[in-house]
Length: 257
Image (tube, rainbow, N blue to C red):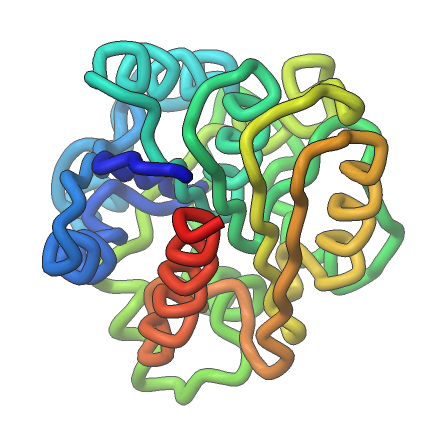
């Protein structure tokens, strides 16, 4: 039986730790101690960061992000439930493969090294990571909406962009294509739930499915759930509770086993 009382939330690219605020409130109501820090160089108000991106942001790498959460997990009194979205989902998979965490949830997760697809919408949604790595990505409302908020009303997409979106490092964005994102898919590790949005362009559901299939080499439990009509914004848009409830239901089931 699992008995972790800590939950560590790992945000993805273009977000800050505040993107998990609704989830933190819900999980705290259930008695969990929640930790939702921002990545290095992501602290501050999104509107301010969009206008004045931190100078050091362009040098941020995926290993530095992973190190920040590795240090956080190591300082807790017991292994936590790890919940990550997008690039944060990849961070969760890396940490689980290292033996960290009581269980992990990777939502619309960026894939580990070697898991890929060829798709025009996928390439367009992630076009920002290409080009000069010394210039941070500062997505426009139109660019962000295409990758994240397809299917949402324009008013909700604008509200989410205004509230949450920050500039991002291209070096982090390219992380999944490098050895920094390699995991041992055969390793025995804590249970993992992969969550996909059926209408996601940034991390298409079939890429999520390939990620799930890759973990078939592991003897450990790996589950998958798909929200067929949802896009990449499913953890922050008006339907976030459906996803959070599914995560809690899955974790409750683990604790009952």
